Image 1 (cartoon, rainbow, N blue to C red):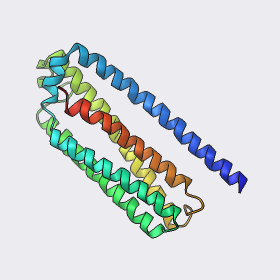
Image 2: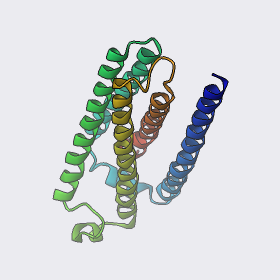
Image 3: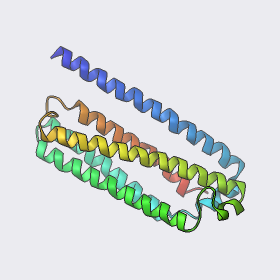
Image 4: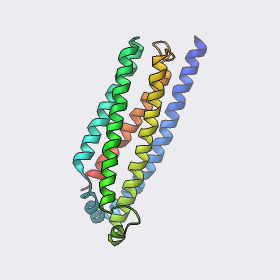
Length: 199
């Protein structure tokens, strides 16, 4: 029992260390964003007007709801209610997919408008607008990659709960998957106002 406890502590510590490295990565990107925004305020404001704040708000609500459902899945497992945990995991995955569908259409609309790095229209814009869209695609794209990884972890958790590998006594994998998902949500909470609510 002591060995399993120490193993779980090690796994959770490993996840927290990983989360901190991810925060450093995005923190660096946020710092770059802040510096460029300070130097090209008008360009950033003009470019942000081309983003749909409603879509950004909807995606924020979706991710906040998914954070709640993944937390409830962990609580359900801890209480020995694996069936309920499975339902909450599936709801979380569905919400994640809804986020990605919204992002797909949002990016698609930008591509239809030729607002992507290297396009002729983009080359006609000012340096501020070019920098904004470059950071927009880089940061939201990197975040989308994290969403995909999070979905993979949640699906693995689903099957582990289903076959009993994750249960009320051993739930560290699901807990770590939940921590990772909270990281995904946390990053978006910063991305949303920076990209969609630039003033």
